Amino acid sequence: MTLDRRGFLAACTRAGITSALLPGILYTLAAQAQQPASAAKSPELAKITPEMLDQAASLAGVGPFTAEQKRLMLDGLNDQRDSYAPIRALKLANSVPPAYLFNPRPTGERLPSRQIVMIGGGPRPIEISADPIEGLAFETVANLSTLLKARKITSLALTQMYLARLKHYDAKLHFVITLTEERALKQAKAVDAEIAAGRIGGPLQGIPWGAKDLLAVKGYPTTWGAGGFEHQAFDEDATVVQRLDAAGAVLVAKFTLGALAMGDKWFGGRTRNPWNMDQGSSGSSAGSASAVSAGCVGFAIGSETLGSISSPSTRCGVTGLRPTFGFVPRTGAMALSWTMDKLGPIARSVEDCALVLEAIHGPDGKDANVVQADFRWDPRMNLHNFRIGYLKSEFDPLPPLKLQEAVPGENPNEKRVREEHNEAMKAARLRREYDRRYELAALDKLRAMGEKLIPVELPKLPYDAMVPLLTAEAAAAFDDLTMSGRDQLLTEQGIEDWPNAFRIARFYPAVEYIQANRARTLAIQQVSELFEKVDIIVTPTTGTQLAATNLTGHPALILPNGLRGADAPKPPDIDDGDSDDIGGPGTPVSLTFLAGHYQDAKLASFANVYQDATGFHKLHPKLD
Image (cartoon, rainbow, N blue to C red; front, top):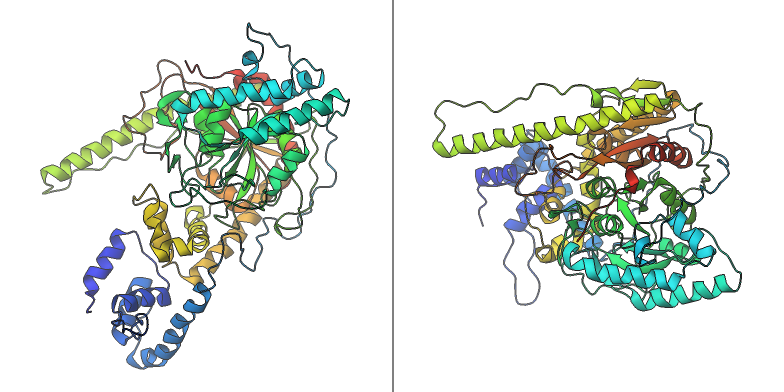
């Protein structure tokens, strides 16, 4: 088969491929020139030719090569291409990591020694409604724990209440993939027996919780939210599940995630935002954030690779803690990016997140990326010695909006597209300007609390250009999905969805992957230097910091920071899932705090003080 060079390059450009791994491109070209299959054996790839090499070199941005150079290269390129097959024949499971470890700490950075001693914050006074248990649906873990240990309520009654709410509100919010009801009722009865016998455990004892459905739970499906995986199951609980079992927490449900941890659309539909059910909950920890926001569980576990705790926590108005990379073991969790995946709690308060992280962090002897770093925190500590920084440019006035200008000779369709784009840009600017008032108010509040804020800036590095590291690892994690064609079973098939992203990633050069990792080393060093100047950084949840700190492995706490007023710009008619700031009137906004590596306890202590001073975490949506 003759391949048209112009057509091939044009197709790759349309697909967003601007750089390519030369042998990978050659593999594709050879596959398209595939020799016919005989009756005795499967089809063979055509030999790589000098013409293919010219096409691949053009796409990869290397060369041009002389005829002699090409002659010398051909045997090696054919041999290299042939080396792919035996590796693919191994059918590597998603759980098999690469033979390297990501270390987010710059050279010379020490792990913290024992941090601050844990002191409970104590419960707030609780008003019991006509239906006492139902009235506790939005209570914090800390308060529920106090009531359980005082035997004012039982874990069984609490579990039954949350199961009932999950069943009722799932019809509207679509946040449940699997209820673990039998397991939960058994656990709750066992906890009540322990408490009755005087065997009082930790703060999570008897608290119902939900797991993002990328965590393996024996006896139940683990679907990863993806079509084609609906009946997948594993024979062992994830480490985080085991640790929460040991802490006495009661697993009531496995929650939705966007297919293979992207967005809020999964094989059963779209998870909704409890504050505005016309919108998605954002993702990919879609069900975890939605269920916590709706008062359907005490807390949940989510995961983040590039915003999957931050985004749904923002959209749903809950508190999310993205721990330092390497703080919580991911054994038994779906791998998307071995060097960026992080598991963390989503709850109603900072204190709740800290209580959960205290139970799940630390090495398990299986996830080699996890280090021994202590986590103990004091919500009542004196914070006046903390140095508080803020990303100044993120709070500065926005630059002038640049709209697309008319071009000579544009046709009516081009004009319509341009005008629609400009209107969308103007609407997005209005929403951004409106939300800035909440961010600026947060700085004013911190100053009123006695904090002297220190302006800092992120190092000027190409963080977005490092993000393809994630996609390359994800494409490797799901190689068989692409090669077998089963990626067609995934719900979303657009230009930004996994099937297309996985295909594009196969053209990412090995050399460029290594170069991007070297740039990542600079990012780790330079971002870490900021935390030699300050202890905590305050920032809007959106912006450059989200990619930067996910790449560098620094921890983040995302807090609700108020509700938009009735004068807020209206949301767009269609939620495309790209922006978290489109909620419209009466929906939450968020604020993010950052800290140095493994300073998660310090981060929680400071964020807890701000949260208590503002009280926005006490707000919850009206669901009926």
